[in-house]
Picture 1 (cartoon, helix red, strand yellow):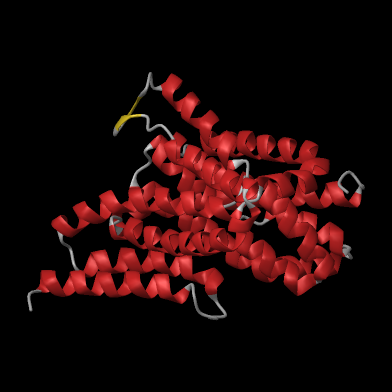
Picture 2 (cartoon, rainbow, N blue to C red):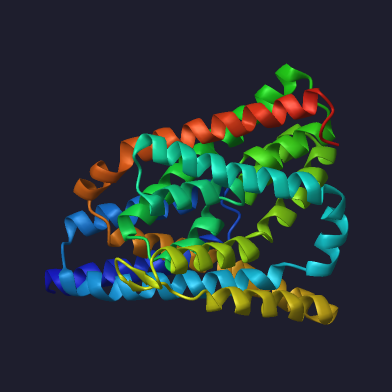
Length: 326
């Protein structure tokens, strides 16, 4: 068996494994996306094959798009918007403020516009899902996407462990902690995990607010697509600014489940498979990344993400303590 054939068999086994693990009761699922990304990077260093990289590069973008569309089947727009309407004001302010602050920090640190956009969007909305939605729109490189994803997953791991401790030290109520987790922790899975450790009330509040924020992937992606098209006159370093058609399909998927409640169970299965494809996409993205390029992009980006995360978390805690958030 040739080295090339063996490497492709390994890739196929990993892809099947990533899909399968999402259907198990594996207790550390929150860490699987980050591991998939690292696994892809490592495997690419071991089996350096330009042909395989070419195909995985094509399918990484396609798989991301399909994953996001399928995730739309897990959103009942009507219910979520009803529950989250009361928090619309601070949601708009926090998302807009985080995006602007993140871009300013990135500019001060000398980070490129695309990586700053990815980090800021991931912090403002819902971590890896936001980065996945926006990266093909602005045509960020695989290195930029991988660094942004890896940074967010690292901070998620810390948030999952540290936030319940911080919440207890500050004497936050269940509702207050739910708001803190939803506004300051990147990914929904980590929000759910930290809130479960804090109590049922925080779980209800945190999950609801986070799902409402996740819906902002749609307008933010469209706005970023328009801004990048205008700044670059419709062009980027990799060609024309990509139009986010998958966002339209995401909306249609959500509307389908909302208008036809009988499809809720089927929609949940589609969403579950979408989560599996998301992990596969991260593995494929990682396969197109080199450690050398990661070193070039990485250190200042990590500092930007940590600084932005720290400022946002501090402001949310202050707002809770002064009863500005309810």
